Image (tube, rainbow, N blue to C red; front, side, top):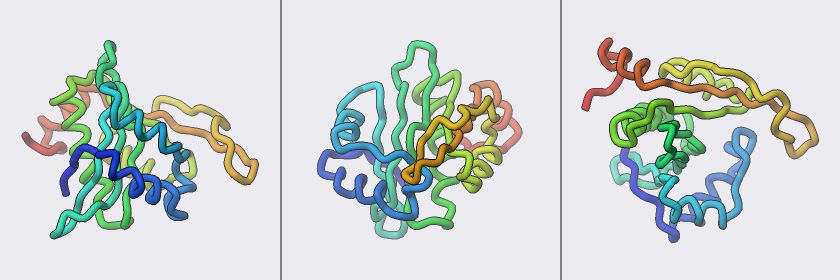
Length: 170
């Protein structure tokens, strides 16, 4: 697996993956112009995930806050296909290293829909700590409300995990 910067020519793929029925329940899709902004604006990092023997496009990732003066980097979006092949875990591990080593983050954080049990378990197993809930903060297509769970990992927690052998080495 590898990441490469998203090009404007990749946005049809990005929007297609976002609109896929397997992904829609877990994200709030963006308009194309929002993705264009994330590709162009230096505070963001927008990547295509390439995986498999031929490094085919397997999803995308967005980081936000890459120039945040408080060193707080957000994992804004991670959308992958196919599911269940360990790509999510591989991406999260790579992104933690990128956030703390390359972007010099003090805090790496995300929010995740409360119904996304699989993602919640992944983030917890990768050292992210639940900070709180944004109760009924997202309105779903069917009119129901869903809460977001805010999770984060601090640089000292990442360093302790790395020292204990729980993180990828350089």
